[in-house]
Image (cartoon, rainbow, N blue to C red; front, side, top):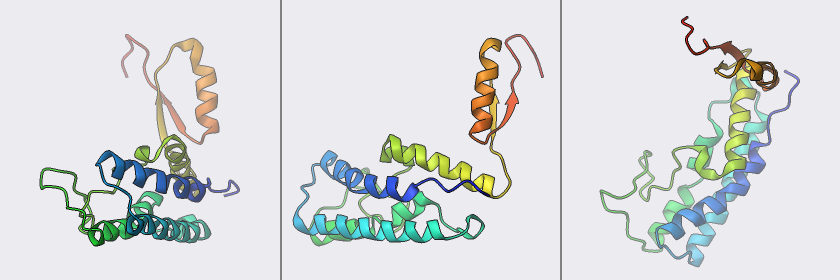
Length: 170
């Protein structure tokens, strides 16, 4: 494959401290020095793990960037515990991961911001193309819009399937 992988590392590392600060602020948690240190450590962990991911051929990558982002939240989870922050009630946010006691893990890269989300989508397409797979896309639009949309979807690497027009049946 000749296309380079998208800069997932730059986008996710930039999003990390902003995401953590937003989640903590939304929950009314003050970012005291020990928590700030956890954010710095987590950012460094993410930077290192995504650097390794970038150097690993697509076929040998065993974790997604979002999985690595979630794992890099461990230092913040630990810092919240050290700072004596009360864990959320059983009805409050809880993470899907056993160690995520404070429910910090994002469910989607969409929660990391527009840039990180778009780069994550491009990374997924890049990885699929590296495996010789073109992700499918269905196109349902006005006939006049079809040529430009088909061209754009093909340029992005999608295998396009034209859906029936209104009143048509497959």
